[in-house]
Length: 221
Image 1 (cartoon, helix red, strand yellow):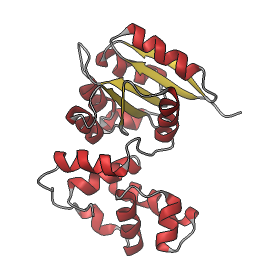
Image 2 (image 1 turned 90 degrees about the vertical axis):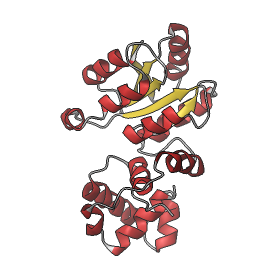
Image 3 (image 1 turned 135 degrees about the vertical axis):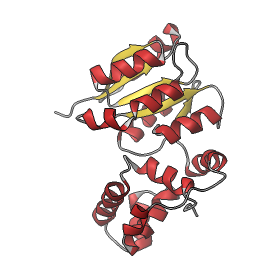
């Protein structure tokens, strides 16, 4: 039997946390494994509980959600984990600059706090699969504002094969494996292999980080 997606709730408002807990626990294949009232506690619980997905509020006392996200994805912490953790930040403002910074640090996207239960459920499953919550256009808008001056392309990018660069560009535009397979005339399994090679060569965690990398280095079409 497949293990349920373990979700950690992080918000300084207990009433909001409990409302989200009811929604998540009512879904098939997912369960709340813990809750935190601030970012500092969230960082500690991620290490202790090893959740699959963290729903992270942006504005909190002690440590906000942006800094907590940065600390969760510090390389030394990532290296100690037996499985990947995904972070979705929760905000009251659409295209929030703080949310964009959290995505740069490793979050897989953001949700508005007034989102529907169905959208919350779908977002958890989406990020658990390694994809972004945001639509490609919204993610591009956020990242374009973050990276006005592109950083030079690192040597690692030059190690990508021609086909891998083609797949990289397609992922950076937000295309799915199915869409990429049709574009590059390959099977979905071959595309998946290329994506894995890109992540390994560029030392990136998931597809969302490919998008961030592309915008950071001026490679986004």
